[in-house]
Length: 285
Image (cartoon, rainbow, N blue to C red; front, top):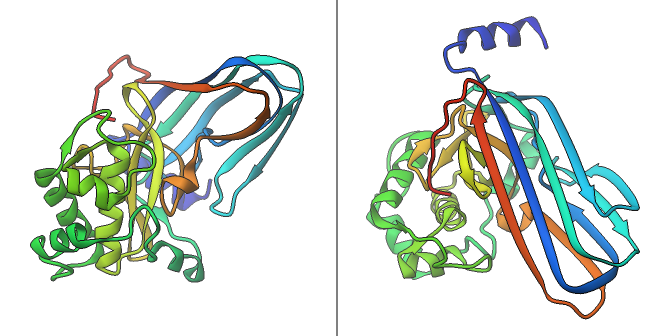
């Protein structure tokens, strides 16, 4: 860490927090499977906002594992197991120091353009375009001010309802329905920001409390990425732990895989995040 970075951390001493996290992914198969190849992307990502103090990853069963990074810089583990199994489990636990900064430096200019383009999840239809106009469109203000205005407006017009959408629901579909979960809040905010010409990206992470993984948005302002949590209508702070980012949900898939066997599968994710002093809060995820 450079001298400049040390000073920055000291200036934010009142917001520093050490968070303990536990992330557990289980996939149960209805019958034994073999030749299972998989990719998992659920490791915490170090950056200016957060410092990994400890991170332990356990994957069962395993016969071959290799770690790499995708085109967005997210760490992932590729593995393969040929033996019969009816349970696949990934557990990640550790400690992270958060609150080191309120934003992160943007990458090279030529890599920012991809976050301006709408995707299959965020592509606006009549409902999103109407909402954009109702919120004043691009209007006045810098990128962060406009993004915060969209976030506040979304909170007033969209309701959190667990189970009301699925992983394939688009921003337009969720908005037409009027309710959704953190994935839907994030995709809608991405769509609105991109309509305003603001580069923004989808983030997967964890939030203090217990539940599942969480999603939020990062908007680009003056060469830095600022986190916005539209589900809870707040700026991303020391209670958030980042795992990965991309253009939308599909770039941040926690688990992908193929196997041999005639079996259905069910997936469950359990997340626990607590402050080292024992305080914990809660929020919608």
